[in-house]
Amino acid sequence: MTPEGPAYQGRPLPHPEEGVVDQGLGFDLGTLHSRRRVLGLLGGAGGMAALAACGSGSTPANGTSASPTSSSASVDSSLTEIPDETNGPYPADGTNGVSVLDKDGIVRQDIRSSFGDSGATAQGIPFTFELTVLDIVEGGEPMAGAAVYAWQCDRDGKYSLYSEGVEDENYLRGVQVADSQGRVKFVSVFPACYPGRWPHVHFEVYPGLDDVTDYDKRLSTSQLALPKKVCDAVFATTGYEASVDNLAQLTLKTDNVFGDDGGVHQLAATTGSPEAGYTATLTVPIDTSTEPTAGNAPGGRGPEGGGGSGGGPGGQPPSGAPR
Image 1 (spheres, rainbow, N blue to C red):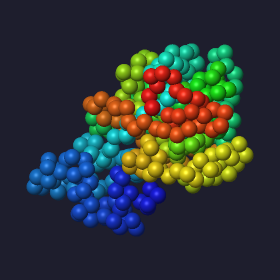
Image 2 (cartoon, rainbow, N blue to C red; image 1 turned 180 degrees about the horizontal axis):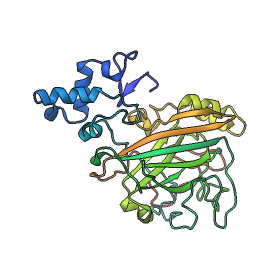
Image 3 (cartoon, one colour; image 1 turned 120 degrees about the vertical axis):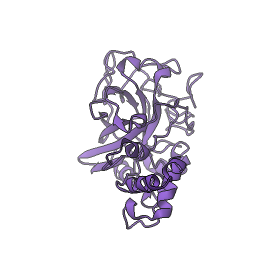
Image 4 (cartoon, rainbow, N blue to C red; image 1 turned 135 degrees about the horizontal axis):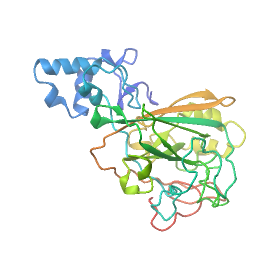
């Protein structure tokens, strides 16, 4: 689902009242072309079979494969790699002189509190997010054993280890190892909307836990986006007041990270309420045969008292920080 209505792999459905399988031959051909397989698949009866396989299972906008056919190739072709994005100015992954990934305690599911010598706990609406990491090259197989490092701002729009007042904290950062289904889950608080950026969560995927301290071994760097309706509900609660005006000045299409495609492959399916908290899920297909890129560099300025440029609050990023 996009702001303009139902879409499949970023393209609006010509018949939104119908399923993906009933959008017509022209739409199917466009799907095949976007996957760069049209020449190979339109070869006689084999091509028609591939068209049928393409339409046999609908796929949500975030790239999840539903009801795969018996052919591993059809599973592979139904997946779109999650876009590579910037890790921003405040990753603490060692790329700008600050690293939390070599610290005891970083491997954890509940990331709300700082660990080690720090002791603060981030406040806000409860928020759990689950990522399912898939390997496109292996026909969409779950990437069991992959390590995922996730980080985000707090409800004030501040990033631990960087922003004014929380330089000595390391909350809202953690690493999890994918289970047999390729899933990782983090327990957190709902992030703020700070000037210039749509509400989001950063994450990096590595082959395994032993690789997380080496940024060059990353398989993907991306970001999870949150639906506007959910953001509106959360930001109407106490503690998120500053986010209301910030969000009003943005859309997913004007955000300078998600704006290239409206975040269609990164918009998490999100359920819950401000009273009960929220749960977000996102499928993360990765093409392990390609080198990850730096993505789009964000801009924006953080809230007063913790402001800066480069896509997050907390003052100017250190020298050499990605922008």
